[in-house]
Amino acid sequence: KIKLNLSKKLHQNIRKQLVEIYKHQLLDDIDITYKVNLEYVYITFDETILTSNRFNKNFKPIENRILSIDLNPNYIGWSIVDWKSSSELKVIKSSVYSIKHLNDLDFNLKGKGFNSSAKERIYLSNKRQHEILEISKNLINKAIYYKCSIFSMEDLSIKSSDKENGKHFNKLVNNLWCRNTLVNNLTKRCNIFKIKLLKVKPKYSSFIGNFLFRSLNFPDMILSSIEISRRAYEFYNQYVIKTKNIKKNIIQ
Image 1 (cartoon, rainbow, N blue to C red):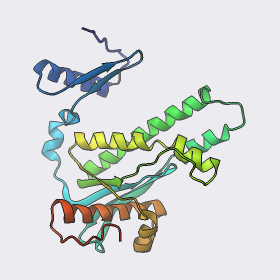
Image 2: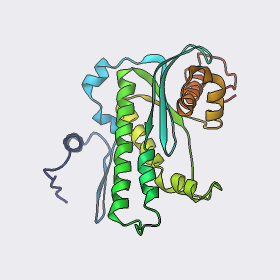
Image 3: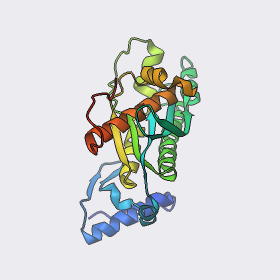
């Protein structure tokens, strides 16, 4: 047996989660897996046990109201849209998160003798990770507040490689983009709060978003998020709840 002493400096929310997990461990009513190495203790469990009872009672999602995001290394565009059809929509709320300033600070260290282990680069890396997690938390709070029935994003699978757009672009996409951190945290939060998560095909989302919705006069990343939202609306209604005929018009 290993006794785990929790630090007094531990964040209150994390402490609450660990206490809740421990209650279930004593009851032996869910699967919990522990893994230990020299640095960390890893705990794997069903995230839905952390769902607030108060939240479940008050949350009544609005049908076909979708919060969607457009993923980008510098900017995250998001929108909340009510859909009646692919051409009938109402944008409830939209905006853009920017972490470009943090990426620019990292690029400004180039050629000044700051390697990957320099405290300046470590600070920027930690700061970027922190901001991404705060963005995730804020997005889910918006989904709850506006009673969104679906959270949608692009189903991206990007491997580190030469993107043939120069070293600057390669570093931005391969090294600085915290895409997996954001996607994993959003997935976890959607599971906890029982929000339907849909990942849609990313092909041409920016181009088609601008083509279809440019009259709304939003920035590219918001228009792209609206197109991602449209795809989620069509896919959910055609293939999941089947309230619409299959038209094969998810992308085009």
